[in-house]
Image (cartoon, rainbow, N blue to C red; front, side, top):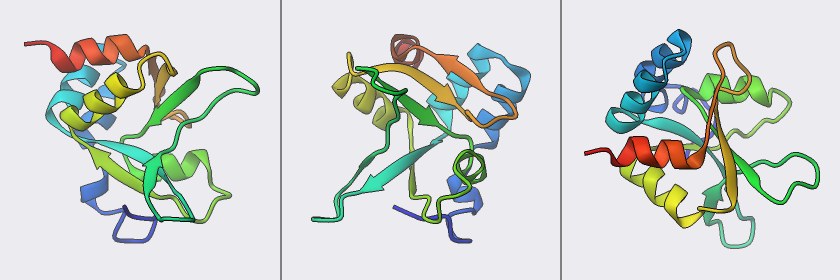
Length: 134
């Protein structure tokens, strides 16, 4: 797990392929980027044992959560500029698929680069379908 230090902002923690797909607003290109590249996933560190977990968000008292994914550390930082420890990992297709399958029914929507400039939303089922097409 990395923080928003200069090492985390390297090319290792970005997906130009996803950024370009979001810029064009093309869902098929986003699906291809998720299958063939990586995505930046916000993480939370459990202070007790230090084991990290995927950071999810929810609106108010909603029962279900939103998974926010990013094309780069910079787009995550833009969403939460007041925070000083932006911990992230990158997921490949299999890791994202595993997380979504494990949390099916808990995640209601997935948002990409929610702070902009090119935001896109999808359902977990749509993303799972895109990741499992043969």
